[in-house]
Image 1 (tube, rainbow, N blue to C red):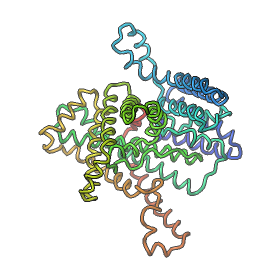
Image 2: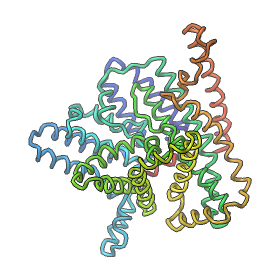
Image 3: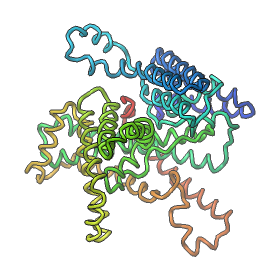
Length: 489
């Protein structure tokens, strides 16, 4: 069941009604969520819920045991064993092909591993489980004593397939508190769902046609066309993934659960470092908290070299997280090297930029950063490392000045409403947060009483939602439903 399917709409409506009928009993609400999540996951393959529940059981038991032990060495040993057990399925199911390739003696084992279906979203709930037992080990959170509560948290269906990755310290306590749903929360959640559906169904799915054409016919196209294809792919991935995250946040909000924001206007970034503070925030935070920081601490005796090593290792691992292919490792390595450069030259660049007008500096930094990201994401979309380097070589060759085909150019029209709305709401706390639209700074608006302001605001939003829903309905008649791009990770 995709979020943009009729089947999911019916499923969620039933879950929502049952969930709020049980609002007096938090334990029953969690049980209802657990059953709903397992049923949702079952729709993708009958075996997926069994793997998920086994992982949940391991995390729950190790969390309780780590919380009981007082001896530091035993506690650390339990953590290491727990992380290894939780990681084993992910490593074996997702990376057997990469790890065992080229080893003749293990060819039979490799073949059997490749025949196993990899559960959708395995990376997300595995990372959530590892994060939980690590937080218990550090004392950041008490071990959860109720199995159903913990299971409902890990399996929570809005984010199970493609994130965001919720931290136990932020989200798990919400499964123990009595849920409340306010008018403001409904307004915020509905807005995020509607805008997320627009991003996915109108923007991402539409321009995906042009992107597929570019990368499929890369050997027959000129450099300018391939460059436009790479830019469109960056927008496609953003619209697809951030659209899913917006819908997930909206669905969770209607269930009284707040999950973290996963994107914060990444196209406004003026450096690669800033980009990773705005893009897939929950994953970046997870790697920073559980990989980068501990590694820097353990290598502190190396001085600044510890940062270099930790950055390279973390981003290569992050690249590998996206798939069992060396092109993702290269993607992570290039990222890390640029971040190392930005870290060690930040003072020099700051002095240099003082000589350049702020307006020019901001725009130039933004354009160069996003061009770099577009080039980097070619490794994501290309079929192989060789194809990626071929496309890049075509883009930087003389053919880049040739005229692009109209077929590609026309698809940029779909990005205009996306970029416009994202820019307008860049300072908002959530989608359609009208408090940051500048209306409150206008004198005529300030003379209106609060009741009328709310009514006007709701009328404006109703009009916006109507236009967006109309676009979604009209578009859905012309397109087959496409799977969310990040499901594969």
